[in-house]
Image (cartoon, rainbow, N blue to C red; front, side, top):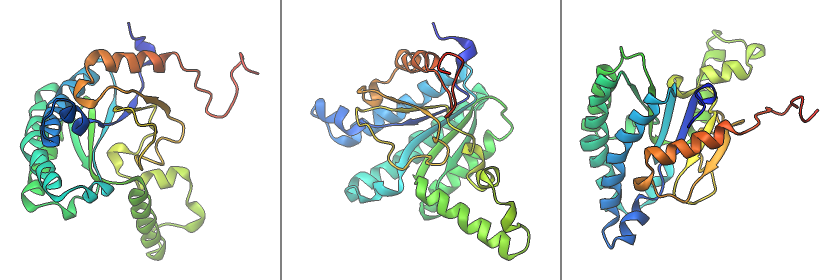
Length: 241
């Protein structure tokens, strides 16, 4: 049973292992992506029911463009047909949806789907769901630096006023808060350029479970593990002093 008093406020998940899940079943990698997309809605609803305030999912990184062109094309269609359409249904679950990343390079139809999805859920005040598409942690920081530099040049920001708090305000607003629990499925132990600023003091949870097999029970395992962590943020608790 997950301790309700120790539920993380912001959880981020790298959705890894779709292709390998399909290959283990002698299917095309695209089949795994399709099943993985269907799993998103289940985990989002589970997170909302457990009282998580913000959930940020890594769906497509700035580096994923290096994948074979047919797979990238399939993923772009998938985002529109599954992620966007299914996530819009979350309006009844009071979920507020945001897409973070550079969406300007996406197709016009996908950009329109993103705008509609965000508009349809804008008044919801439950779980904040961020889906990262064409996102990279370094790119987000470069974007923030450029915006800060422009504001300094325009005299709307003083160089001496720049602090960690100010930098956070220049990140994607819906995902700018510190991540409490970082989850990566699929077995790899790396952060892959995801929310670099926000995960500075995250608890990092790596599981070999492939994303299509990541169930509510697997989410609870991660939450139970988090509840048992001694979070000191660089300091000492009485126990360790």
